[in-house]
Amino acid sequence: MSTFEILMPKMGESVEEATITKWFVGVGDKIEEDDVLLEIATDKVDSEIPSPVDGVVKEILFETDALVPVGTPVAIIALEGAEGEEVSAPSAAAEVEKSVEDAKEVTTAAEADFSESDKFYSPLVKSIAKEEGISISELDAIEGTGQNNRVTKADILNYIDTKGSAPAAPKAAPASTPSAPAAKAASAPAEIKRPPVSVNAEDEIVEMDRMRKIIADHMVMSKHVSPHVTSVIEVDMTNIVLWRNKNKAAFQEKYGEKITFTPIFTEAVAKALRDYPGVNASVDGDKIIYRKNVNVGLAVALPSGNLIVPVIKQADHKNLAGLTSDVNRLAGLARENKLGADDIQGGTFTISNFGSFKNIIGTPIINQPQVAILAIGAIEKKPAVIETPTGDTIGIRQKMFLSLSYDHRIVDGALGGGFLRQIGDYLEAFDLNREI
Image: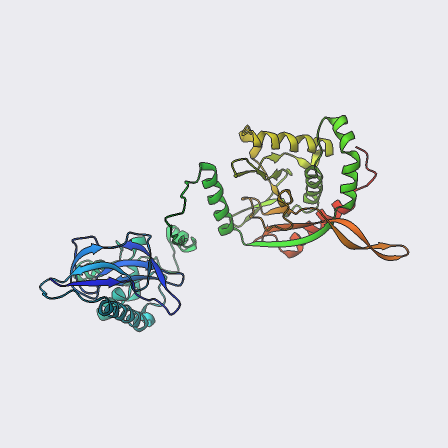
């Protein structure tokens, strides 16, 4: 019995490999020409690959999620009723690529008839629909049994067989009277398909721990929900650096707390949030919730490599000593994994200190359901122009970058930029002679 090799087809001039995302057949399955064998994905397109021959699936050479070079055999089909030698790989490659090209031609021919549909249909399904005079509304109404509810060849043929006695009802309600479920489905975002990932023999695979899975899901959700915009300013921190160097020993002696720059940042942020309440907010559908309390979260890196965000409640009501006490207490509890549920709830704004890792600028992801997050860069000595009553001069100043990521649904450039500049102004106006 002759066999036929199904090769990974070339799906574009620059495409050298593709990932198998799903097999529609198994070993021993009887197939007909144009039956869909597998689904593949490249960085440019996802495609269903039909069989160019009739026969029985003899071997499947790669599993789902395998990354396969173009021209490599992926399956072997036994040709029923045929005797002779095995079909050569070059011949098989030509047949498969011709099948793919034919499918593309069918897609192009049928595009005018089905371009208004937001559903995916294989070239074969479109061809059958066109030949049978099936309208776009009828095709959209067919309940698919394939991956992601796609309509398969069997689905459309079954519909044709039963069309006379049991026509499919339109799936969507009339535009003038949309049903609630239909309206909700129409407004729902499309499902995001993760890219395929290849694994080499020398790679190590480690399961995410529970916290990392939560963080990953939260970050993806935030980017999907909020259109992020980032603004950046540079701030002169010279007075603050000099004041802290001068007073840190006395501060610890008086309050029993080591003072870092974080409480000073938190103080400036809390003041600015009172000045710009539009940033101390959340979005709920088409409603804006302006928060009464100013609760500032601080992103803390844990020894495990994960992050957690403890919250300083009513930060705008506390002086520098109170903020320092809260910062040190929450950071300590976080690193010891002893934070309580109340310690990480209720935040209305978040600060992430990239400067702790000697980074100068960051574009952080918003901590939902908040609408903005501040990234603090490393403080560095830089040459700067200093304005004096007798003229400008060049001097060494302590500078850092502040970057604010904000939700552009309700925070525009004027609000976000004004708020960020206000934080910078509070920091630069820090009194060098301030009492502890």
